[in-house]
Length: 395
Image 1 (tube, rainbow, N blue to C red):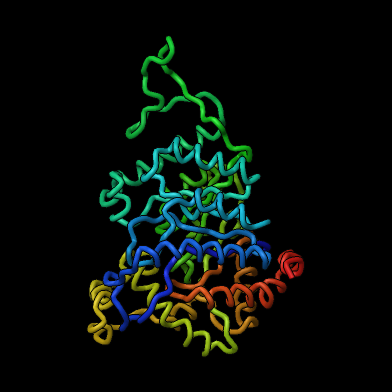
Image 2 (image 1 turned 45 degrees about the vertical axis):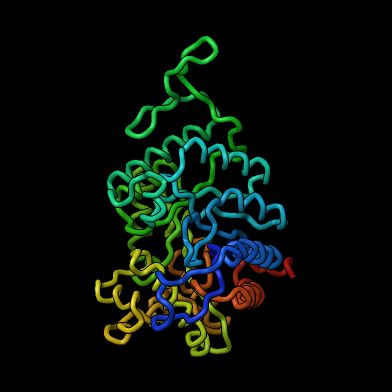
């Protein structure tokens, strides 16, 4: 049953002229001051979640975005700060982009956060999807095979290092340690210091294409999966859950449907479903403009992507509508009772599911986001088992 209610926030500016007919995403530009202020919005979001009994706030690592869309370049630095200004909220790395890090540096930084916060920072890994980010840091992304190989090798190194024992590694991308002289001997092994206190390390990874290779790699390291975006709509969830369970079964581990997974939804609460859809539609469309052609939400044609870049073309082709996302189950819109009904159906369909991540779409003003979080905690969470006690304690 669902017992953990999370949200995600990537740090954005408050945007104007939203939607398909609004400002093209590539033409958005904001001042240095406005971009920097988004970090303070992250703090406000986290404090709101903490005070209302949410379990985990998930953030994403992103770089070089003057468009004002995803403005947290270092999750572990932000997580350390957020743990200092909140009391109980866990902070999730959703996700550290492994190919942009040296794996030992990432392992070290996480270990420090784990120790100093008493385990309130949750580790997460991903391959990356912005060429502007990954390739700028000198790692492959346009070469998908090399990107996946570098990601997998990096994660292998990280999990070896997490044990806090001497180890070595020789692979395609990393030789650890280099065989160099050091104080009278030649290096053969190296030890991560400090190592995480919470072992095994809880780790999460996004599920997008859902290939057998990806699922087998997750099962190899005991990694949990987050299904969100277009992957959380319609039959995609069933396919991903089946592939994930099969991979764990090949390692002799039986999982209930939804176990070790989190489902991500966008949401907006209003006094009726029609009002919620009407109010959230511009934000949903802005979200599609940002992520659609990065192929994170659903398959789009070249004509649809061109129309999302150019408002003059918006009326010449059918574009994704929020009504479709609501009907497919990826967007929770309506009264609290409507959202409870939808989540109860999800809970029944996937009896092993414990965690859902409910967030507002890109472009939603902070004031609306905080109001949505407040209503969700007071009017939705109490309907779900253990979350009832969490929400009651928060008030």
